[in-house]
Length: 596
View: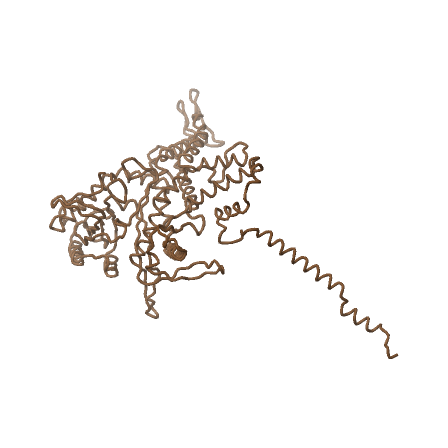
């Protein structure tokens, strides 16, 4: 399919190649400007406190109130998505592809390592930001990098490692462009835009020699930057034609202390040499200098960036979000709300119709107006239809909730009408079908490849053994195991099962309760195995770690209780039959002395 390979002239001169890459980036960026305009408009509505910052600002209303319905839907979706993705601490598991990969020790080591790194790297916080992008923009992008965060103790001079391992990095949708006609995001050639200070870039080059930056090209870019920063804006010919995103003119950019880095990843075809170059990483500084050209070192044969869209478009990788189609309805809601408020203002402070030559007067309570014979002062009544919009506003708010796939039942509200418990559950399952489909899509297409990329990056970069925290099932205490690179080289996949397992478990338990509470449950009860039913409840409710469901455990514990009761009763009887010490002493005192 088209769109998998970028085309540009590699050229003998690296500077020419850098400009060709910058031109390709600029072409793809310009092509999606309409989409970025939609993102900005939606973002303005989400964080608006009044209509002055939204597209409603052009309306001639005195009132500028905004009803934040889009914001409420967004917060509702975000809270429920996060709750489904991470319902408990056991939301991911290892599935080995070979017999050796399914050994208990292997599974335990990989899961322990991943759980430790997920917790230490702030994984959930980053995923929370990505879920917000999934809702706000309909597209979220992430990269996985191996991070070695260290600092030196100023007292002892000791080097302390705060975190060492794979980490998920959020990429703003505004900072990545790609060919949207590619069959998939993983196959699409792409540019990622980074803004770094000069100090950050030099620190990265010094601490990460594995990045293979061309030091000579970087030094040359910095030297020219220092020279151009001394010029005035009028000294740079046609500087107004070189607008760098976010910096204004070219002269302002060079004086800012920041460097723009464009990083190309993917396959490209050299139109001059007619040669295909596969899986390359090319870094461009200032859109003028090539800082590196390397093969992508990933084991999986592609870049480490991932993408998922909420509502996919045919033949276009830029997806729509759940709120995109609702911006017009939000505009309508704010329009009607302010129309009603202005009508109420006109009722309380109506305009006056003055007929004839009326002397100047003050309009207010207990004021006197002098009116000639042919004069008159009359308050103009507002249009009564303006006060009939409350029902229309309520209907629009309900429609917005339903169209976003966020039914009111998710917020604790119940639809009207008497229903049985089984009917209520059926309605809730049907109402949340869109919601469950979208969260499953995020989990399968985005979260799962991210976790496996984290594992791949760890395999590639882990050199020294690391400790991972596990729970000892025999003693119920926290233990630590040493993880080596060999422990992570098993064939298989990490699978997040939070949303999928949560929904399947809930539906199964609800169906089971519905059947057993019906007459059918009474009919089939003689044929149901209580042991297997107990095992199913233990598995689907996540009770395994508590280990309180065992074969006939209640019978054995009941027998133990009865035995203990009988023993206590027997001891009490024996004690009641034996005379107390005081009674023995009294009997000894009253007994006659045989010597007498």
